[in-house]
Image (cartoon, rainbow, N blue to C red):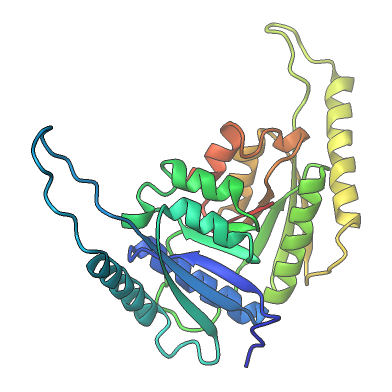
Length: 296
């Protein structure tokens, strides 16, 4: 039996959607790997009522009725996903009133991981399309995971990922992401792929980049990748370095196609400048072909 005082705590947002069911499955599998505990959270709020000014608005649902419905959604989802497939797993069910993003972020500050589906409804409307996903990804107090649809969602037992891909750029956030990814790959018994994207200096339109400048950029990129490989303290079965020329987001998306997990730091420099602040974050968040982990 897991010791609740020492267990890795995983908070997962559940709203009854297929995406949140996938997120819950992923969190349960992860908890098994880490001998951890899962906290399934469902957020509810009073429905927004519209009415003609001067006319008394229709009465809102009673708090007990709304809370009971929220509890039913959570219990139904957890029972359908977990069932008897997680014996001995610590799985807590939490129903809370309020904003989904705010509540998840608050609970993440006392957790080891926050997991949300790529899209939801109800308490998680617009996930990965609006502010909820951005807030969870940027402001979580622990590594946050955005899951994707599972092709074999009903398969029992922990998944064995084909490989864990991590982006590095020489920054401290990149090093933290690398350490997290290496530990994850080791526990899953799968390969770790370490990626660094490099590109030559931007030249004014019409000017040809000198060959020595291009070569220097590639050499510098290799140095960053070599330093990252030397810094991997935890040794998974196979560690594959990939040095690739091109935009960071596109490079990561290409390499992670067919992977089980993509891991990035929340902010970096060089090949991953502006991560979670500009276009790179948008592309990775919206188009990652596998579960995405953002290490804060």
